[in-house]
Length: 326
Figure 1 (cartoon, one colour):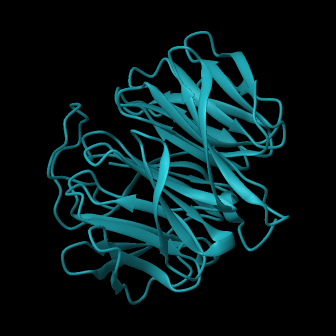
Figure 2: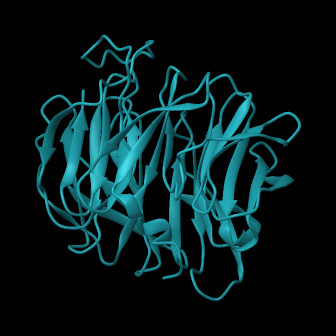
């Protein structure tokens, strides 16, 4: 795979200097994890994909065993392995934690998993699916289908969850990777590494409305909770901030080189960026755009996700497994 351990290398971490709640009440609070590891689940080698449902179910996929596991965030005890056919690189999960959608890269299919029965109930053929994103109302699933080697355009498929059918497709640049959704603006943002672009898609019409030529190697993207900024992990330059209204760059954060993964805490106060080749993450104060801390991880840290309340965070690490922060 190209300089993208691409979709296969992501870390991040949670930390901060102002936090309180240690429970997940199902509402967004002005809180985020303290940056102290609460628990590590050494589930297997190759932990990569990650999702947390609104109800607090944690899902982790394992690249080298080709399976997925689930655990309640309160206990962090992972259950039986759910076997996939190929390489499960990304996961989305319904709010109630009952159904998961898994991008099975090498098997070229979308697996729909019944999490109550711990089994794959249906598979849909999609060539090289890479990322999956479920809208908060659980009605639409966006799937990026991307070749990692030949430089051909990528496709973003629109999947109707209720009817379980593909209903539309959008063509974007080569190697679509990062994906974010803004419910308030009805916009989807997809980074494409092949042309160093962020693609803005109208989620109402499924039409490409704007492309931001960001340069570098754009990886994960995230929209700020106030809908004003787009944060981009650029593997060449570091973490970059763009004004969504004008599309202009506002800042590149010093000390964030080799950024790959990116997440913004639900309260909007902190940004966590991964640096996979350094095996650590940086914790950024969003208001001042400065690095507050660098936190060491295990080996080859991958994805990061926050619980709904923001009081918990989880990262996957190919060497360590799943790491919980409270």
